[in-house]
Length: 201
Image 1 (cartoon, rainbow, N blue to C red):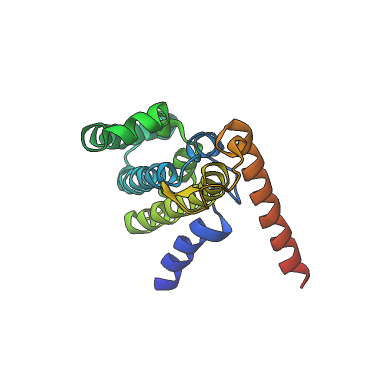
Image 2: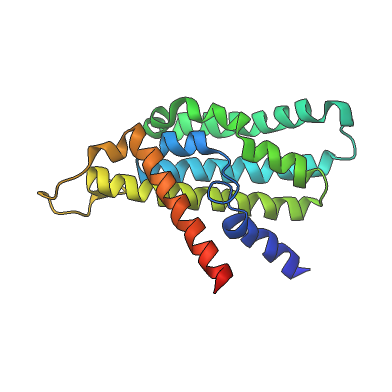
C-alpha cells in the first residue's frame, strides 16, 4: 500500500512530470518563469489547488452525474483558485501583481483538469491527494529549474540575490519571451537525450 502511494508521488515528480514529460501547463511555465520566486509561488498555488480539488472530486465522484462532470470539476477547481487568489491579494500583494492574470488562469490549467478526469474521479481521497501533491511538486520543480536558468543568465541573480559578479555580462533575452522558449526547449532536449541514453545503456 505504501509503495502505491510512493510510486504515485514519484511519478508526478519524475516519470510523469507535467511540464518535462507530459508537456502540460506550458503557458504559465513560459510566462512566469523569468524569476525563481515567481516559479516557487506559482508552483505552491498549483500544489494547493491540485491537492484539494483532487480530494473533493474524489469524495464526490459517485454523486457527480457523468454528463456534467467537466463543468462540476471546473466549479470545484475555480473555488480553490479563488481562495489562493484572494489570499495572495491580501497577504502577498506584490507577488499577486507580478503573477497577475496567471493566478485565475490556474482554473483552466490542463494539468489540474487532466488529473481530475484521469485520476481523482477513479481513485480514493487519500490516493488522489498524493497524486495532487506529486503532480504539483513536479510542476513546481520544473518551473524553478527553468526559472533558475533564466534568472541567473538573464539577471545574474537567484531568488533576487546576486550570484554572478557585478561586471559579468548577462543575456537579457533570457528573461524575455524568447528566452523562455529557448530555455524550455533546451531543457526538454537535454532530458530526452538523457532518457534515450539511459534506455540504450
